[in-house]
Image (cartoon, rainbow, N blue to C red; front, side, top):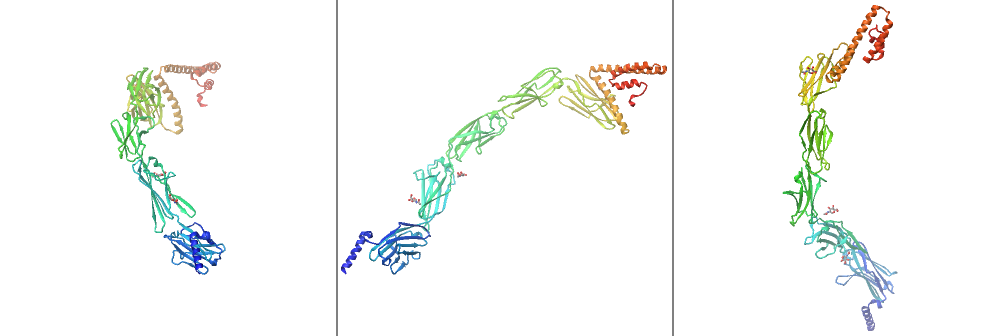
Amino acid sequence: MDTRLSVSLLAGLVILLHGFTAWAAVEVNMEDRVEVFKGETAQITCMFTSDDGIGALTIQWFYVLKTGEKQSIYYQDATVQSVERGTQFTDRISVNVTAATGEVLLTVNDVQLKDQLEFICLVMSLTDGFSEGRTKLLVFERPDYLSIEGVQTGIYANEDTLSRIGFCEVKNGFPKPNITWYRNNTPLQAVPDAIKVVHSTTTESSGLFSVSSELSLKVMKEDKDAQFYCEVTYLVPGGTKMIETNLINITVYYPSTAVHVWVESPKGKIKEGDSITFHCHGNGNTPSSVYTIKHNDNEYGLENNMLVLENVTRRHSGIYECTSMDMETYEELLGNTTVFVNYLDSAVVLPTKMELDQGEEMTATCNALSSLQTHTAWFKDGQEVSVGHTLRLKDATFDLAGTYTCVVTVPEIDGMEKMQPLRVNVKGAPEIMKPEQTDFEESLANKVDLTCQVRGFPAPDVIWTTSDGKVLEPTSHTEEEDSVYSVLSMAVTSDLTTFCNATNKYGADALTFNIKAIVHTTAAATTTTSTSATTSTSTTTRTSVLSTSTESSGVIIAVIIICILLLAILGSVLYFLYKKGKICGRSGKQDLTKEKSSKDNIVVEMKSDNTEDAVLLGVNGEKLPYSSQ
Ligand SMILES: *[C@@H]1O[C@H](CO)[C@@H](O)[C@H](O)[C@H]1NC(C)=O
Ligand SMILES: *[C@@H]1O[C@H](CO)[C@@H](O)[C@H](O)[C@H]1NC(C)=O
Ligand SMILES: *[C@@H]1O[C@H](CO)[C@@H](O)[C@H](O)[C@H]1NC(C)=O
């Protein structure tokens, strides 16, 4: 007995000292770790080999307490299979032994965070000794509620201290997730006096971790365009996962280093009367800058970096200096621009008015002072009559009289234009313009309007008279630039001749109007009468007008008088022959016919009538009148 006991004690010591590998026949193999999400089912496998049958083996599961001691959770031998009571696993584990493959499977249901422990599988043989293996159970939880928040207020660049940029947070992860900040896709690491990242971890009551991170930077001007975000890395069974926040940017205020001022409008050359819009901007963006523009002794405040000067004159020419004053630093920056306001003075026409004698020649000039090259032209009645400063009028006639306008323009600038009129009068006796109608036929009691337009300078006096010397009051009298218009509106009472007489110190002119009153009898009769009447009156008027107006008309009158005389002679000859023929009977008929035909030729020439009429008259000398055909 003593020997046996001592042998077995020795064996136990040997086992303890040298481990089971060298001596024990039982061997156990286990994975280092088993990874599983919280709430899922973990399976821990324990592989064993033993020469003994399953009936000779004892299998036990433990977990390791924080103190390092083992806490049994399961026991099994040939007769007993039992889950240890009163542990965190009591209701959640089951063990399945497959003797054929030498596999013991511990299943843990609904894995909890506190289950992250080391598990021990111990297999003991009655004869071959024992062996144990260990597996760590690792529990995971995906984090949620990832958020990022940027600083909303503007940040001044180049401050001495670091400025807060943003804050990231992720909640409920296990194990602890990591947060990394990125600026423009580059991860940020803490750099003294430049980059600071402060992480903090909270353990929730559930045991999960919430992690937050705050980024502070020494902000530079370039950061105005930078984009920041957080990346969260966390472990999952078998690997690492990553999620990113959305991007944030920050408002960076940076002071100006230069100021620029310019004329925004008008583009191109400026003229008097324009509105000038100045813009003045610094190349910084600090909201605390105040802008002013100075010109000579004037100082203007700017609104929205803009200044509008309305209706400028040449006095607005010069240098405009824009000052930006940073109200934080009291730093002043200057920029300037030069403005030139072009001008065109009023045109001066000399002489201011002109009075020419008929046939005279005169010259006028037109000048306007301008900062730019000008173009001068003269217009009359909308037509360009001369180009250049000088207007030369030659061989003055009434047609030359009127209002000339000198127009000075600056070709370089649209809308720069000055005008000055010049009144030109041509002295001379009145000249009545021949109206369309001087002969009227109107029914009794109707009205006729007689118009008399007279040229002449000085403006002629116009009076209306009837042929019996009665003076008529004109209905209207208008004196225009180069004509006098006088209108006489009168009721037709009887046939009437009216004169329009115009006079000034150089002479007189007159115009005759003939008014024929029409008396209505029967419609047919009236028509015939009026036709013949028109012919006769118009002939009369033509003769009278011709006799008063020109010398050559005198010749025509003489011719006509001779014609009438010849006709009278012819008439009396014919009458004499007729009488003679009656006395002498029909004996002289042959000779008579001959004589008649030669005289007929004369008639044809004189009257310019057609030959048929003449022949008729000759052949049918006795027959009266030819119009009966
Ligand atoms: C978090 O960062 C620590 C320290 O850099 C590192 O050891 C750990 O593996 C990281 N965890 C993850 C999930 O990336
Ligand atoms: C951030 O960038 C977006 C788009 O680029 C822009 O609309 C927004 O105003 C920026 N925000 C800040 C604070 O700069
Ligand atoms: C008007 O002119 C007509 C025609 O020449 C003339 O007969 C008449 O006497 C003149 N009347 C006056 C008032 O001069």
